[in-house]
Length: 63
Ligand code: SF4
Image (cartoon, rainbow, N blue to C red):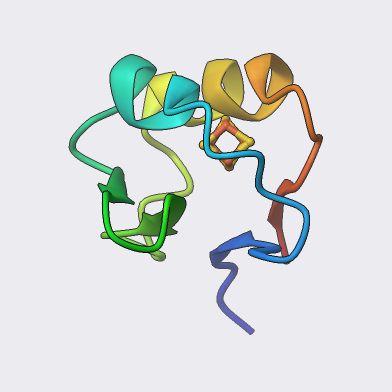
């Protein structure tokens, strides 16, 4: 089974850290003030781990 990157939107604080660290993988919806995943399959991209560990809400995961 392939893994994918998931954001728990309920928990997202809208800080934009993930999209700043890793803009190819994470986007930010300015209207909703929530981050979203542009490339869920991009689990191997280096900055993804950094975004996960930098998220203050700890709401990004790989499932
Ligand atoms: S780093 Fe976490 S809390 Fe901040 S915008 Fe991204 S998902 Fe939301």
